[in-house]
Image (cartoon, rainbow over all chains, first blue to last red; front, side):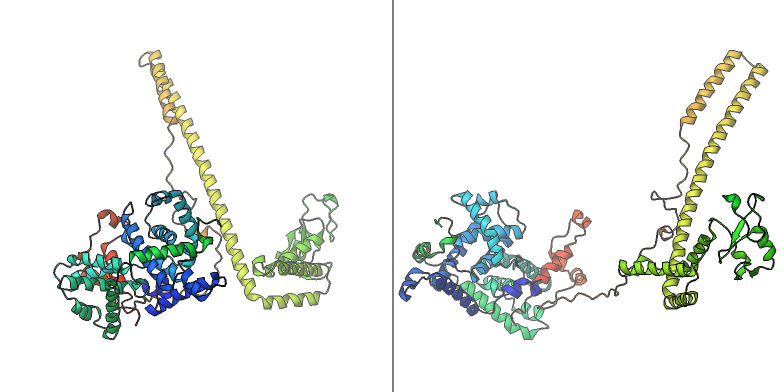
Length: 286
Length: 312
């Protein structure tokens, strides 16, 4: 039940501004703890800026998606959705300079497999990782508790997948749309993209699901507006503007998803290797 | 020693009259049976030693040598009838111990005629203050005693039944043996056929009977459950009562679902309006576990509708 979930109570935010304020705060907190009498100019040279951090995380969200897609055995989509949630939640309260997103990414997926009851052992899991598997296992297992702690142990995530099924059932029953199943491809594509945005920490899963359904209907040149106004909001017309606004914003967010430029990411990664918190770096001498 | 016991009134001793029975009453003074008959012809009278008014039916056979002990037993019995609180009635062990101490003091006072008036007053006061508890404990005691008695009774009955069965069986075999023997002699007497043949036939039959006897007699019809409870009798007669703690009564509060969205259709509506036609129908194996496709359908619809008003 989303309306009385911890997701709504503790992990939903009012606006994009609130999110960026939080991210800037994490960035500044990390810098002020590690600046060691540096000059203003030096700080900008040495540490990542909030903007750079944001681009880096976007890039790692793409990695997260690709990792999950390539995962063997194939994982249910709810695992991917939950992993994205964990990743976003973690970096709303931490700076990527403190914990490298590469490590947190794998841990998020591993924890999400457990929570969503997709049973894989750590051995099976690490077979999907390139490079030193034993080291990866070590990092994932040691980060797992840390991740849960930073999520404040709120592990249940409400994904938009079941609401989509609900809307499709409702449309098939109460709407005259011909063959609603042809919306499915568009819906899935849209939902995949929403995970690359901040929509899941701003809107409810059913709003995201409805946005996906409406967007997909648009693509096949159908109009479901009357379904929304006459069936869903028949008795609550006053709430309609909020929903329309939410759906519009979600669609804009999805439309604006662009992969960060490659050379910028390369530059940021180089910078991160130097400025990251060496206490949390398994390769450092500390 | 018994020989020295004597009636204080007629001075008869056990030695002179071996059937002498000494009786005792609440005052603790003894009298022999014949003196009791003589003095209490009318049913009541006073003790020849202490002039306390006594009733004839309160006389009992003296069990202890010392009549003082007898008196104490009597008093104790009377006091405990009212002072029947138990440990459960007290909050702490200390209070219970104080209470026991109190009883002992009262019994001692009454036995030795110390502060008789005051003690009696105290008892009256106690009776008045604790009337309810006394009554409750009395009925509880009565019920428990009754239950134990009925249990004993049942055991005795079963024992008797077993005995009787065994006896019957024995009698039966005895009688049969007798009959067989008589028949053999008759056969031999009438001389129908060869004597050795008759004997052989007899031994053969005897073998057969022995075989039959080996077969266990048919199990008697069950009259009780394996737990020992008789058919038809309710359990609460057999077991000691269970103490029920008093708690405020349970009140049911219906679950209020916070939707934050339009109301999803109910399970009935889902079936009536055809929502469930658009989900996979359940397999028979799933139905065995209580699953119906309506459940999945309802959940999907609920999750779709919940949270649609989010942010407003």
